[in-house]
Length: 180
Image 1: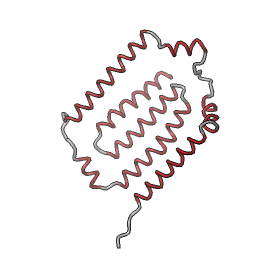
Image 2 (image 1 turned 90 degrees about the horizontal axis):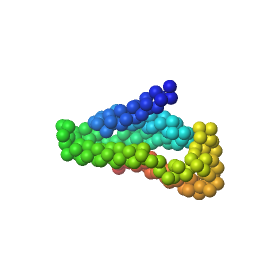
Image 3 (image 1 turned 90 degrees about the vertical axis):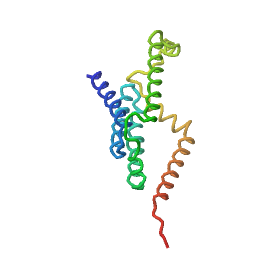
Image 4 (image 1 turned 180 degrees about the horizontal axis):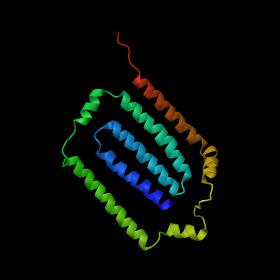
């Protein structure tokens, strides 16, 4: 059952990502982006990264996507019309460039998979022999919480202040100016 759910999340992420980059309608692309982010959060659960999965849902799905929808709704209609008047045929130069980059990354991933499949990297072998691999029962959220609230408290607060400043700036930019 777990294998079926994993492959379901993986297929949903890959399929939605492919549709996302080929979509011309920005509103539909934003909803496909939601599916991609949600699927990646599901894959993080399978990678035993529960904190990252929760962070993915709260920050990216809950925050960034809402901001993108907000920006889309407040954007200029003329800008949206220009975006949809782009190149209409499939064999355009930017598509070939994107295809070349995607195939290059695929070749790198296949080469890396073949190399790792041949013999395990030294850091994985050392981690297994030392017994420091993450097990499904390990409580990584507690360790991350202690580190964030002790050693990394100042950077955490600085990032929160910067995000608040960005939100205030976005609200100021979207405010309508009164013309005399």
